[in-house]
Each structure stands twice: as C-alpha cells, then as structure tokens.
Image (cartoon, rainbow, N blue to C red; front, side, top):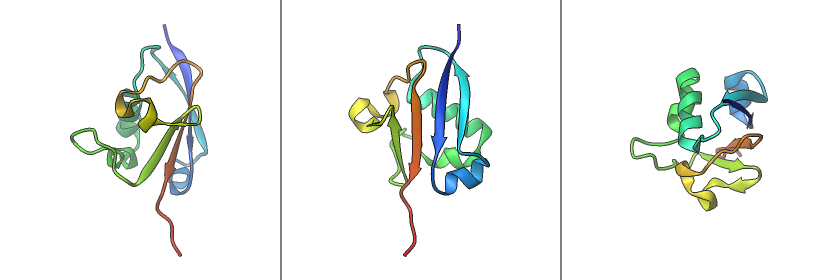
Length: 94
C-alpha cells in the first residue's frame, strides 16, 4: 500500500528541481531519511543535505507539517501519509 507525500522546495532548490513541489507516492512507514534518499537518487542536490553519518548540514532547514524535523527526531522523523515536507536552503546573499 502506498500513500502520497508533498515535498515543497524553496529558494535555489526550486530552480534546481524546476518546480515548487512534488507529490510522491511512498510507503506509509516512511522516515525522513528514506524520503531524502529517494530525492537524492533523482536530484544530486539532495546528496548535500546530510553527511555520511546522517547528520544535517547547516545548509537546509526541513519541516514536516510546519514542525522542524530536529524536534521530531531528525532523519528518523516519521513522514506520515498526507504530510507536507518543506526543504528550505538557509544560504542567502547580501
């Protein structure tokens, strides 16, 4: 059984992906790390979000239904069916 998750992109990620959001069909028992791996397989930019030890790099903020994933368990945070995941680059120019 699969479910749908919406992933929204902000800043330069919109340009890299070529759109503001994606609707993905995923398994109901999805973790954030699984979702990021799916995206990294399709988009090289996502390989930069977490390092080899699955620690976040300070280049992106990620929210699940508006809540910072650091509060929800980091890369182990569950992504439930119907969730919206926002990926926001924090880099900016002056």
